[in-house]
Amino acid sequence: MVNNILSMLGLAKKAGRLEIGEEPVGAAARARDARLILLASDAADNTLRRAKHFAEAGACLLTQVPATKDELGSAVGRTSCAMLAITDIGFADAVAKKLAALDGANYGELSEKLSVKAARAAERKKEQKQHDKNLRRGRKRATK
Image 1 (cartoon, rainbow, N blue to C red):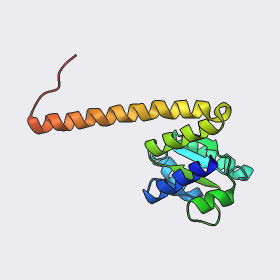
Image 2: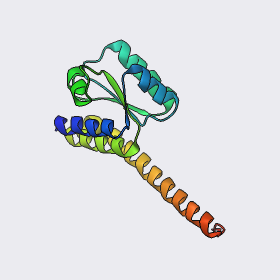
Image 3: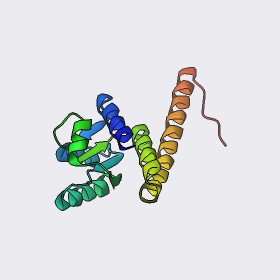
């Protein structure tokens, strides 16, 4: 099951929705682009402290995954990776669901929070699409 999570991270990297390493993760979090920050299970305490700070600054979620730095690194094309951030809500939700299926006690709450965030994002996207469609046709917004 961990291999499924690692392959999802590889797909996210190919799609350009993954920030790898401490500085890119920090930049994505400060820009409020990060949706989920993942830490390796064997990450150092100082790395964990910095990741918590990034998560607070960027208002995103943080979790440790059951994979080592070497396993995370090989999944994203590096020799080793202690910290990475997923910038797409869909990928973040999918990874959280896979983590919850692996260990519901530790990752269940994370999965629920990301599902709510993903539903809100989908609703905003739908409203924006309808708004753009109405602008092209010159219609005014209906009042409730």
